[in-house]
Amino acid sequence: MITPLDIENKKFSKQMMNGYSVEEVDDFLDDLTEDYSKNYKEATELRAKVEELNQSLQHYKAIEETLQSTLLMAQTTAEDVKKVAGQQAEQIISEAKANAQKQANDLDNEIIAKKKELEDVKKQFDIYKAKMESLLISQLELLKDINKEDA
Image 1 (cartoon, rainbow, N blue to C red):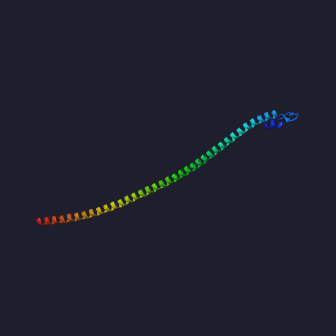
Image 2 (image 1 turned 180 degrees about the horizontal axis):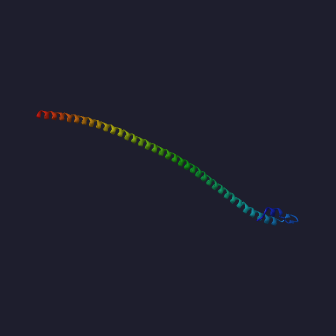
Image 3 (image 1 turned 60 degrees about the horizontal axis):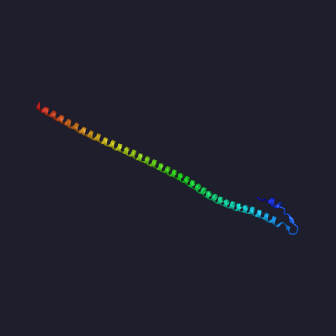
């Protein structure tokens, strides 16, 4: 391949009348054209490759941005889900406590009602006992009166 130094140092032999040898200049220009064509073709291919690589790079950057935004959205969604789950757990606990308190209050009210019922039964029993005692005393008096009359 011809280098810039080769071109700079190239010396053509001079002909007496017409200057440089036409044949040598044509050969040199042919070599120069061939190398320049190769270089031009290679440069064109390299430019195309650079453009292709730049497009690929842009594509992958876009994918990276999409992945980053997707990851950020997933993190945000996960945090939201955790927050909602925490709120639901608190609500369930609160409802369970309220339900347990209501059941405890209902049991307390039932105990109070049963105690009142027991007291009422005791009072009725005491009244019944007093009536029975009174009846037995009156029956005993009646028997005593009958025994006095018989004697």
